[in-house]
Image (cartoon, rainbow, N blue to C red; front, side, top):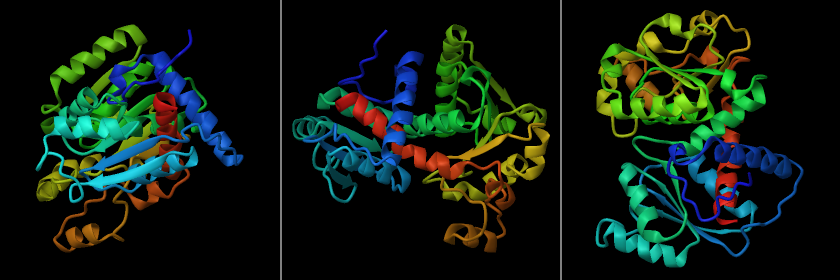
Amino acid sequence: MAVNLKGRSFLTLMDFTPEEIRYMLDLSHDLKAKKRAGIHNEVLKGKNVVLIFEKTSTRTRCAFEVACLDEGAHVTFLDSSTSQIGKKESLEDSAKVLGRFFDGIEYRGYKQEFVENLAKYSGVPVWNGLTDIDHPTQILADIMTIEEHIVKPLNKVKVVFCGDVRNNMSYAWMYGCAKMGMHFVAYGPEELIELIDKDVVARVKEVCIQTGGEIEISSNPDCVKNADVLYTDVWASMGEEAEIPKRVQLLTPYKVTMEMVKATGNEDVVFLHCLPAFHNFETVMAKTQKAAGYDIREVTDEVFRSKHSKVFDEAENRLHTIKAVIVATIG
């Protein structure tokens, strides 16, 4: 059956069928091969795209900008200091205006409701660059990286997310694994497990009935056994810096170490991270927290730089998967 995503918004993977996600992944692989061969078809020539960033970004912003420029589109960037959205103009009014100027809108910020309302009122495709409860473009890149480095069909792959199991990356992985029939394990402390949205778990388990996926939530270190992927994220998300002392105490047992890698029993286990990562003390934040007595590293430098780590292939794949989403929806 042919897949046509023209005019669709990309707000969460839960909005797409496994076949549609497969289409975006295949397109991502194809666009990556073409870029490396120096082939640019400029399928977005004459298109205008606006990027709205309420949260700062390196990979997401650069990926969207380069993806658009590679294929001939023009990009406008707006952040909280350069737009009136929600300040002097309502979200609804802003969305209606932007929808008349632009062919597509990217949003990176806080509330999922915000990106959903952008799509509701703008009348053009809207792409979720990150919200408090989801990060779908990241998961596409992660799955693409898995396909490049793990010689197994996706429905045989086990992903273990270690640490803050109630953050947006953990939820995004639940959505992705459920849709693609994968085995997902949220591995973290009981205190945070209790905070996981039960409605999210119920929804993804319902999807798993159809796809054969499996969603597991555990505080038992044995759950990493036979993992194909170890994944983690920073322990305090944007705006949660005040929580660092408590998070360090709570999450240090779930730090990805070489001991954890060995505990998987898989010599070819892959380590992934959405980045940026605290893996050493070469950042202002890590140094400051270390001086205050807190080791905020969620992964050791040994693992981060090891043969298991594919984080920079993963980061590059943000470009190719984001390009695929844009091309598929407005190209």
